[in-house]
Image 1: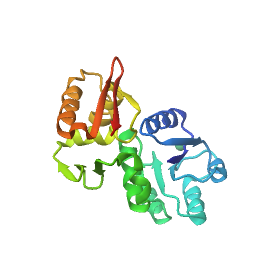
Image 2: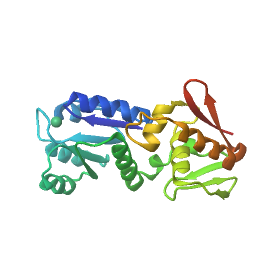
Image 3: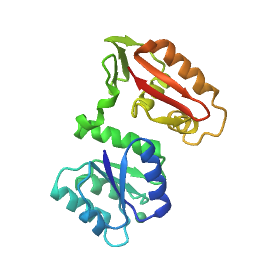
Image 4: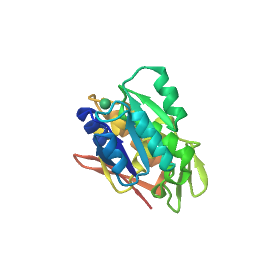
Length: 218
Ligand code: CA
C-alpha cells in the first residue's frame, strides 16, 4: 500500500513517514507540488496545501483531473473555505494540523473503505480459521463469533495487520492505547492473555522476550 506524502515541513513529514511505516504503509515523500505531479502513481495521496512552489489546491485539482487516486488534504490553514474548496475539487477527506498519526491512519482507512474496499481489507487478516470483519469490528474463529472487548479487538486488529512482524510494547501501546505512552505496560499483558484465552489456537500471540509481541496465524 503506497502513500504519496506531499509536505514541505520536514519534522511533520518525518514523523508521518515513520508513523505510517509502523502501520505497514510504504511512504514516498516529496516536498513540492511539481514533484507530486511527477511522482509514480500511488494508492493514496496525503497532500499539504501550503507548498513552496504552488498552491496545494491546484495540485489537488490536477491530480483529480488525471485519475481517481484517493486524496486526503492536510493543512495548517484553519480556514473553513479551504476545507470546502478542497472537498469540492475532489479531495476525499481533510485533516487539520496538528494531528496524530492515529488520526491520519483512521482517515486513510475510512477513505479506502469508501473508495477501494479491496485495499482496506488486506489479505493477511484472513486465515483458514480466523477472520476479522474490520467494518463491523467482529472476529470469527472457524465461523463462530468471538466476543472481544473494544481494546482486545483493537489489539488483535493491530497485530493482524502484519502477521509475523514483531511489534515492541511501546509501538503497541502507542497504536492501541494512546499516542504517547510512557507508563507501565501491564495492561497489555492482560489483554494479550485475554486474546490467547478467547481465540484458542486459531492465532498465536507470541511473546518475543525483551522486545514485544508477534501474531502468527495458523
Ligand atoms: Ca506546508
